[in-house]
Image 1: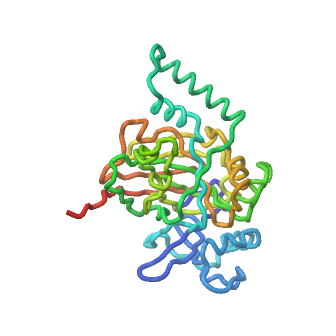
Image 2: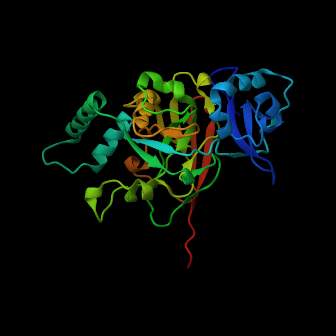
Image 3: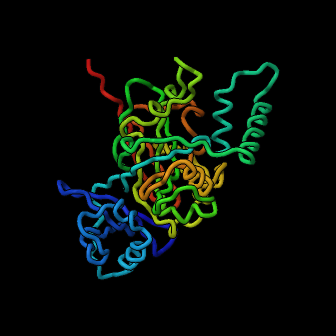
Length: 331
């Protein structure tokens, strides 16, 4: 069931039933409006996907509001429908090292021991680095692959090439209007809505051992098939409220691992969209992942194992639930 921050709110998702094809649906509570039955009101011809809706977002959002408010529009139960990733993006931009406590923990985890310096001094040094970065630096952005996107309830298969796979729950902004080189003040007007992403990471593949000077290898560490569980729904920005005041919570087998507010971001959503747009022409349906808070497995000394179940929640965006399955190795 979806409960947004606005009583009149709704989400958009991608669904299927049995062997029928996928369709875009408008979700309220535990009911879905099949938007493929509303082509006349939407003024659309042909198959309707969430990407099609996002490509005409400014024109279609008012009509979607009308459909949601119309008690005469047929609805079907959400129960029994298969829920897929809410949107298939053309491009994915990801923000690294964007939550203060998370970055400090990673800095301490990877820092070389210094003779005569205790943990408190090391943390104070890391905090000073974060303060300078927030005041003088810029977001750290890199590219993800759409092929890594999977549904919010699909199993996640862990590659057998490593046993160091980690979770990173994140708020994802979904672009609703083409944007190129905008200011932070203009940026949020180009965001259609938000969804949940779990940006899984293979920790021992992040840094290249054969050529350390190259630095990070995000292709190997973050883009295995299914490494970006997405959804369950895209919730329009108007129903989310302040994106910098949402709680991000991930549990592993029922135990809370991540639980932090988006207000802990070093660079807010507007700053991230603006920074990405300086280089990339962002298109409707594109995703911008905004970073993950503290509580990752690498810092806790507990990485993902076969059979683990992750549940990710963000205020007003619903919940995703994914089970971890070890890759079978041919004998």
